[in-house]
Length: 316
Image (cartoon, rainbow, N blue to C red; front, top):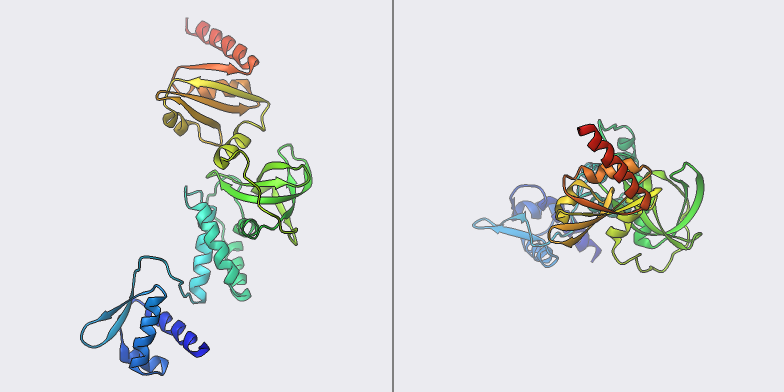
């Protein structure tokens, strides 16, 4: 059985080369009969690989199938894929960051130590010309993603928004990318509540903590929860507005990192945003180019009224 499995892997490795393989050549390479090659090709097809047979002289070629069966990579290919996934994970390209991290976790779990060292060396020797704000080491992302998958607690040092340093222990739930930054949604065991941590402010400690049972995510809507945590909660002022424009239009001007935009009607939406500056809150909404009303906080209502009077005076 072991000999057959090893031969199937060798056969698959040969078929992954972009060429047609005569059955006789495969039989010679593997030291078996042409009949054995035919049986092995049938086994590969049963495993989900699409193997085309050419007419006339028996020949074989690996084709695209309906699913993605396991792939065989040599050392150089594995390193190239790992580095490429790491680059995509922090590239800021919308929609592929989290997927790249998941794929990178799976790949690094099976890489032998010699290849992990090559991947690490290449990363450390590469400097991108430009990167998203708070660029993250892919190794940190994969370590956190692995803990999420394995349901292992994380122990880490954390630098808060005000610069204060502290040690935290948390049960990681999900990684969330805003396109510019990465966040970890986790249950903070010390504060016994859900928290959102900026990954670029985390420094992991080893080993990880004990395993944990999964909890229900906060609020049921993880995207909304993270948006609220990073766009309104950390700030001194939390503004609420009604904007007379469609929610999908406003959302293109005020992304989830800036505000939570909720549709109220076909052409009206409610916007919640935070800032340490009343001027900034007023400017954000005024620049939308649509009529709006300010609901709270009271000091923002007074500030907008005074600002409007000054603007009118300046225009006379």
